[in-house]
Length: 251
Image 1: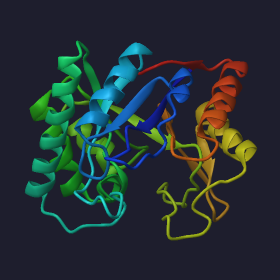
Image 2: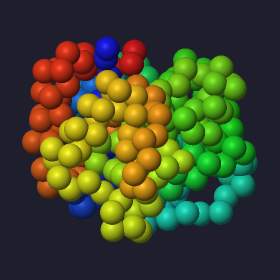
Image 3: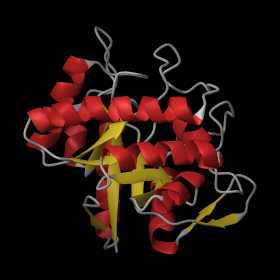
């Protein structure tokens, strides 16, 4: 039994700093690097790639909507053609930095609203999957466990990774509770750790409605912008190891 721990990273921009704690790289096995649309900038992207390569952490692109003010968390009505172009553009930008630093990019994980919309919208999911495939069919597509994004990735012949969330609550259809709901985030660290252990070992998660929902966990997202992100990552990493779960990248 093994699991990948991934973290959204490189989300600073210009003079603004967000979650740039290098120490978290000790406890995660892959990072999703912001590509300049919802966060990040060229200098931050290069620095983040360098840090990830130094720690031998798998590097993925984290494309989002062009929405710096909303941090990519606001739904935007886009056509599949627009979504395709956004994703190709952002993968290409990060891939250039990874290549320049002598590394290889491993995966793509959409960000925020783009990710959540693609979890339910088949046409949007297929546009994203096609963009990933057309850039590099060897890339792994991360998506919400059991979602349309996972199905689209398989349709295009991509390797996929079913993603679960440590600090988010779930609905009975397997979707994440919207952030507009005050119950969307799990603030108790022990509760979050236990949720992950149950998802990984027992392949289920308890929804806010009290329903046990079957779930496939191949990678766990740890948000790197919390006040105690590093401490939580360490706690989760150690809990998984103590339960006999191997922590390693999907590659």
